[in-house]
Length: 364
Image (cartoon, rainbow, N blue to C red):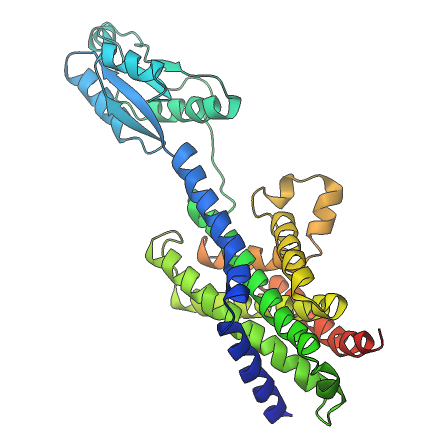
């Protein structure tokens, strides 16, 4: 049985790496999504804001310096006239002005007003700045003036550390890539058996059908894990995931392998139903994207409508994404046992259904 598995594995991997079309179908959707997320991050992650520091004295200078160092937006020091011109030309999202009487009002025991002129043509765009401004102003030194009156906020975080926007979305892209690579590689290799006319000989040979299926699934796993490790390694090197322990990296590789195996099993099932490259390619991309969005690739699953959340909590990559985000972003393995168990159940199901689907497709 082992000889059959290794023979199918070598043949299918060779088919994958020698076929530019298969590689393109595997990599194109995640790459397009990654570029979209990078552009989105550049557009909204650090909005340019003109900073007009009109005040005199040490408090005013410290206020301008504190606002300039705030990471929520990117400040551009400008004069009042230049700031207005940049605002009118859509070169900045807003104009933040430290008033000239900032130091004087503080000395008199008052509360100086820092103004924000914002372009409000988009509610989400505007809210990004309006949410950041109070936080930024909370860091401005105002000696003698209480910053908060009456209400104190006690923050309780769900995760032990924060994740940046790109890191959070990069895990989603990684899951999409693993699923797409598994489906496409195993599916295209299975379709090749029909296209070349070798499927009947393969399934009627004395080799067990399960050995053939395992070989095809392993080929999908190897191809998916290779591209997944490359993307994950680049993301780790770029600092998207923060600090990750070696133990968590090994656990993440285990989750990636399980997810790739489930995707490969799904790919064999799709190939059995479609039996052509022309139909399998678009179907695999469509399925991968639907599963990506259902798993919380863009919006958190907890915020989805109840009926949609119920569907999301059944699909395998919901659990793969949850496990990888915990291990790579938060340094947490809180739900890892549950996630691995569900992925293992999915793997058993697709392996059990694979031989039956392959043999049934021969009778059609």
